Image 1 (cartoon, rainbow, N blue to C red):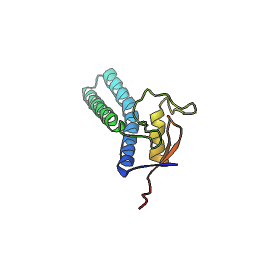
Image 2 (image 1 turned 60 degrees about the horizontal axis):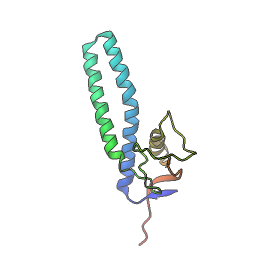
Image 3 (image 1 turned 45 degrees about the horizontal axis):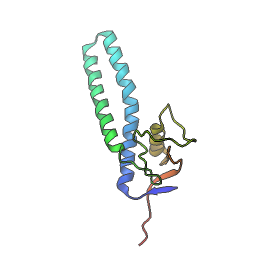
Image 4 (image 1 turned 60 degrees about the vertical axis):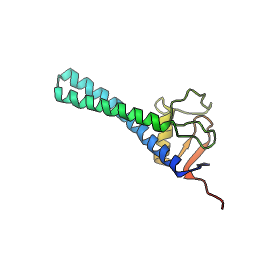
Length: 130
């Protein structure tokens, strides 16, 4: 298992993983709430849905900024950013998203399998020899 060079990288990956999961939850909730509010003609619910939409956009922007600095410790490719790189032939997606699979692995298992180099990394820092 590969480890990260600094604790700030581990923290960034955990934060970006949380934002990926929140984004995956907020987007359908916002869409469904807005559609229901427009069908029912409820103005208060429409304002609430638009607020959720703004929160979703803010989450997407924040996730995009943080995820750009989430490198795999082996191949140095950003595992939570939207890259057009070729995935490993054995990489698996979850609900059509490779990033969601990485994010859930980080949050619930403390490890993830890089979709680019297909190597497992643990959410810990390297031991320093001194």
